[in-house]
Image 1 (cartoon, rainbow, N blue to C red):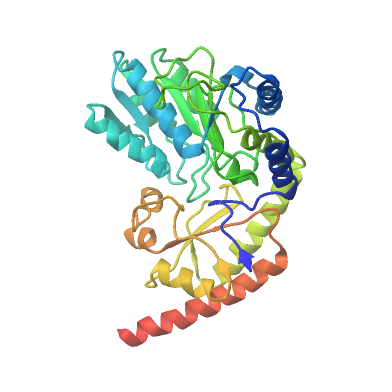
Image 2 (image 1 turned 30 degrees about the horizontal axis):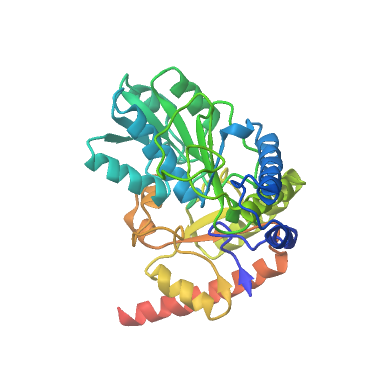
Length: 377
């Protein structure tokens, strides 16, 4: 098997899995309980929280545990908008966002909020001058992902945050799901940040929202004690502990891992360009993601042809509900490229041998499917 869909989800690190299993077996108490077993579980969660806070350079009380990035995004966006709607109803975002950002924004539009999309440069980055023009006194939220999940475009988060801070009624939320564990994240100018453990070799079903302590939000879930009043429900001790472990391991040798992935990305670009494959990801995109387009052939057809060889890639983000890639169209302004895009996502676990096999099979399948389309014509 050759797995090249790491941006959708990563395999669980064995040490992380062991941490989860050991905690599940040993810590049976509800962290909200006042007896000894509950106190022990809460103490372990508190230690894990301090570790996550230390790595991300935030305060422990700024961490809200969620079921993943989708819940964290919804909590941030709806939480801010419902709490501060008396200040204004203007929201700014991009066409590159994950569906767990775009869909809540569509929902809010039905509630009377105004969503505006900032212009992008030719490389797909936020046009900072256009953002400045679009910021208004009634802007209450700017939500822009640190890295595009489909194209790997790295946004200037620090600069965006500085612009938003000039407007005291506005808050800046960023989805750092595709950043965390791949490169160091600076949250200095960020008010809220979402992420999920399954993207950095952790367990599925656990994520978090970083919310700076001076910010108040309207919770999505009410009722029941938890680690914070902003998200009710029994804290999943083993998942939280395992996420802290996954994050710590992800930050080990993070620069060396990125250099290795960059080397693999350079190889893929070179080999695919030889085969006249259109590459949509800009050269300065994060090396873990390479978005391409193939003419005529339906992405699903190509994906399943590769699947027969036990090679796994993606057509778009795993959570996308559209048949075409809105992100690719937003950057390329080319409907054909958007209709025929594929996403290859690699990891430091990927091997050169895997990529060599992938390229060989990819070109072979492309030629075979292309000949079928020619015959049909």
